[in-house]
Image 1: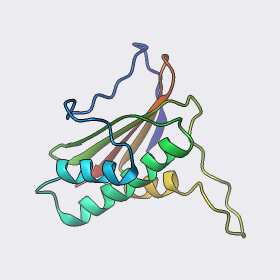
Image 2: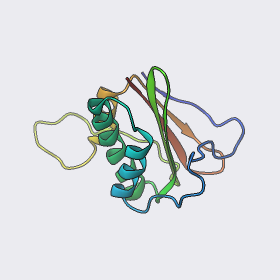
Image 3: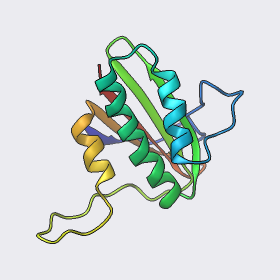
Image 4: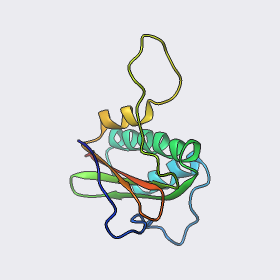
Length: 135
């Protein structure tokens, strides 16, 4: 499922559970943060999550004006990943083509791995992408 929700409260809604740590400055640091939060999770699910983290955080840096927040939470039935950036523009996948065109495949990949993806534009600016990956 993929949906877009409005931020009714008007503020940012992602707070990293590790608020005492600086925000990851690179995609590698974001993967390291996620890997640490996924201790004890099935290694295949960890790899799926790290792939989605890589894609969404790369998009935040490349198109979103930078990473504003990152959180990874293990729930009983899913991994809940949230990535917040500074850009109001909603993500879009490229149209199918017979030619290979670079870029635009991260969200499509995340959709294949995820149970649910929600994009929430924030009234204060930016957006949050919430991804639920099944365990």
